[in-house]
Image 1 (cartoon, rainbow, N blue to C red):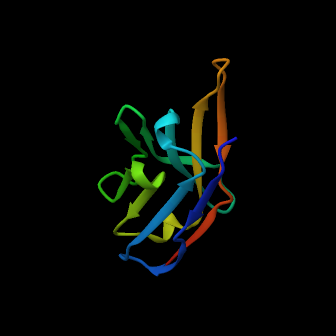
Image 2 (spheres, rainbow, N blue to C red; image 1 turned 135 degrees about the horizontal axis):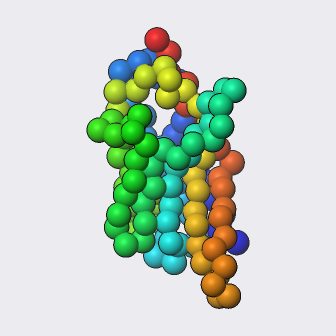
Length: 120
């Protein structure tokens, strides 16, 4: 069981920046991939950014060149730096971890979510 705790959400004006943090309960070296998803009101949850153990990253087209995902392995923490925020970035942001267990089963874990609100 991987426990994830997010922090860093809040209210910001359009054009501003926020950094989200996700602290994992174990070494992120053991986790296949960690990422950030978001759910806006009335919409389905969508992938925002993902970072794999091998070092590759993926971003939603809507956040490319504005958001950056990074890892601090020593702190078992993943960050999402969000710049040039837009009102449409308003959502609850969830940290996600995908880890293969001893039996080869890929398990998914979620944080509790943190609200990001961007005012126009």
